[in-house]
Length: 140
Image 1 (cartoon, helix red, strand yellow):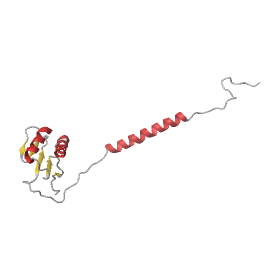
Image 2: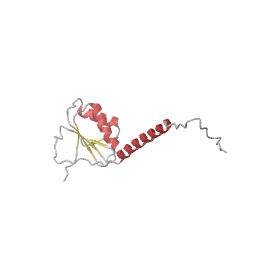
Image 3: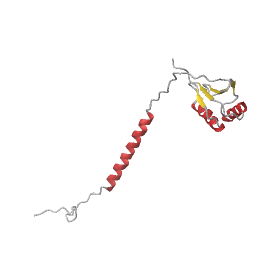
Image 4: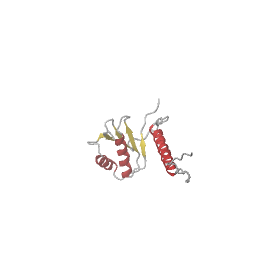
């Protein structure tokens, strides 16, 4: 007496469709590759360069912009009334008129807001200054 399982059809070959498995593996591979790269970017340790030699500019010729810790601007020893871009643009334009070849020196407090520094650089670029420098203290 032979028992037949009525749930198994022996006339057909068993086929395992691996297309969907390959798709899932590729998606997981891409996901892990992207997250591994993002993890490396967030753990960067940045060390800023130190200045070994000082370059002294003639302060009468240079345009000196100082950014304080609270984000306010001091342009050639004159404190600006507000810290917005329009005030900074007007003050620089009134000070140098059409002379754009003078050095534009930005001095910033170490705790100055990054947005204030970006605004100063953006303003210098829009006004056409090509000689923009950052002031640093000599490493002792």
